[in-house]
Image 1 (cartoon, rainbow, N blue to C red):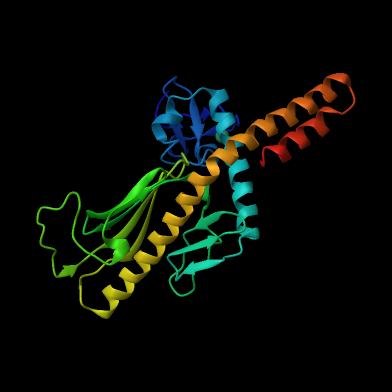
Image 2: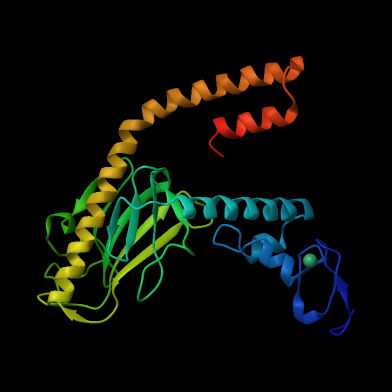
Length: 263
Ligand SMILES: [Zn+2]
């Protein structure tokens, strides 16, 4: 099996040359096209792919297609209730947020739309040092939300610098494909008393406040949600009984289940 030999893709069966295939740990090959269909991410990286079985790869392709369809659906239904410039958009009616893309006009057409419930933590980084952090089930720590500066972690000096080169918000999510998101507000050096820095800082505060409101609401709702989950399970059980009785078809059951689980 030399470099110029053709191999069959384990997924689609098509013969591919060395330049358009990847060898899996079990010795099989996957073509570039099938590999891209699995949508490599932080949660499904090249090593996960290489050690996966054919079933796992096929499941992953199905899941990636589903996720894409679902995301496109969210994009089409996304109606911003709050836009913090081109940094982040919120949709309070659907409980979604997205980081828009585009230099001249921000759009979310190619963005991932997250559910509010996927938020775990958020923190403000100034030149790499955390100045404020908060998250689900956590009190907010640090001064950014109140307009104070100075690192709370990772900083070496208590006296804050007079310039800032990088100002960003890092969001940690429960989404395995997009576990970490960065919103970059500044990426060049600005004096902290400059208009640009102050404007960016104002956005940081707005975004942080919004995130804090969201996680507070999530915490308040988590008890309600638990009860809702129980009733959803009960509902599904009822339909399962109807299915077993032959009163409804498998298709009808699947459709109902999907509705109840909000899939
Ligand atoms: Zn293939």
